[in-house]
Length: 135
Image (cartoon, rainbow, N blue to C red; front, side, top):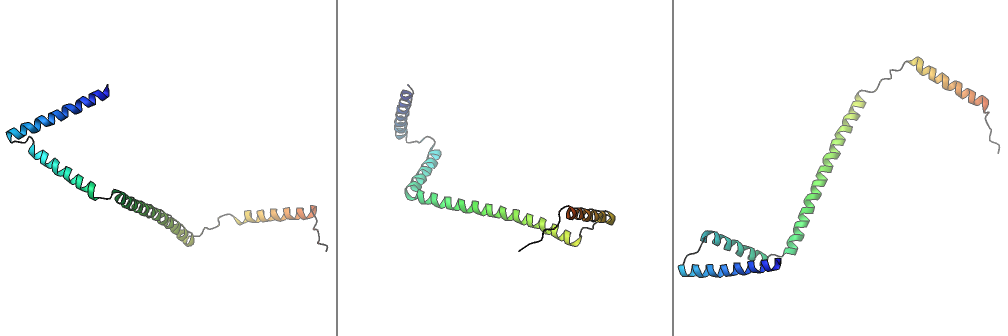
């Protein structure tokens, strides 16, 4: 059914076209002449382009250009990221070099820790005697 509607619509448009051209030929006047002239020029330009342009080569060139632009953009944003990280690390290193951390722990606590380790090492030596290498 839908095919029949399309066929009838096409036939009606064809009959309307022939009636309009016959009417314009008798009267010597074109309806919407400015718009039709502009449309004719646009159609001529499209036909000229379609006849003279190698679309495969054009598409290949456009894909290369687009890939180059995308690659450039990715490299540019990567470089921006690397430089921002570099600036952060440079500032961190500069701050660490200029202001070294001062050990604020009391010395007695450190000595207590060393003493505890020494006692532990001594107790290990007492329970596990040294084994000499016999060759």
